Length: 496
Ligand code: CA
Image (cartoon, rainbow, N blue to C red):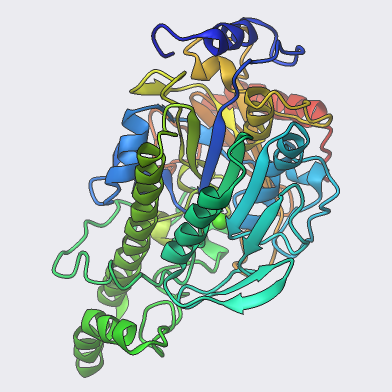
């Protein structure tokens, strides 16, 4: 926690020492909140989380000036369910958005709604993806559905418009415009929600040339044969070898409309595409080509998001707002960057399960903090309600992270996180599953298959050696099954 701080510090310390769900003493000063949420940005595509490839100096700076949560896990690794969980503090079966087809009931209590009722000026720009109209925001302007990377359409209460430019830059412009014209007498909540780096990974004109002459290292499991896994791992349709489209791979029509953007696009892709057409590749060679094209585009999109973070930080510093503003960088879930041969998310495996969560609040959070508690997506909403001195969300299933922000050890922190994935068979034939992850192990149950997977995350961090059913691990497996049942009782979830 910040040195020598003030009235708010002592009130937060009181919060931190109390029971997590206890009513809180009101902070006398509340932070402004900027919640930057990207879409499908894996933690392992961030420098601060150990990536040697990602170019994320601004997110890295945010982490080095605040706290980086090392073990933040989503409860359902696809966009709409994970987003609804961040807003409501409850798992999918409670907020009802179990898959991307479901519509979010906007009358449910959310943290933006609670902060708005507590006096915050609230705004949302960018990706929403929950089908219903945003609620809890005094101002909102969002991409319809997934939105577009180039010259995106935006939807607001006033209707639709198209804005020229690249999505990550457009939403940043809109966010800074709102900050400029906000009511300065009230604390603010700004939700700046990026489309990037979601499929189909279309980089912005400023990032198209990054990684041009590099060959990116392949993950150890790019050619995973799924030998020990349940049958679902081999049956999925999210394979870099088989399932990327010509459009995904930039072998189809270019996306940009404007001449200058088209020129940058052609410069980035045309020569490589021509070489592939002149000398088509097959088998593992083609998989490797697909991997390079996919991952470079993904990381280029990430670099564009990072540039946006830099612009926001610069604005806050220039306007004297940095000290008292909580800036959060997160993504809705993780993503596979070639591990197990995959793109996309969905699975309870680490790459998709973990999401980046970084918070900076110079007045209160000690710079350079790394937190290793098991954190879940259900925790964000209770945290923000507490910090903003808003009424607690009545249904919240998560626990406020306020004590952890203070560097305090809360009593009775969770020892396991709960996960449940539903969406099947379309679009990627990923088997429905649920499971438990502890500090050291993970048990995944595939009810349709009557199969399970058990991984020792310390000995086998890549999750390729399934120990379920092994007599040597029978006791451990039974204990994890009991822990999973206990979580299902606690969250009142009853999968068939
Ligand atoms: Ca997502």
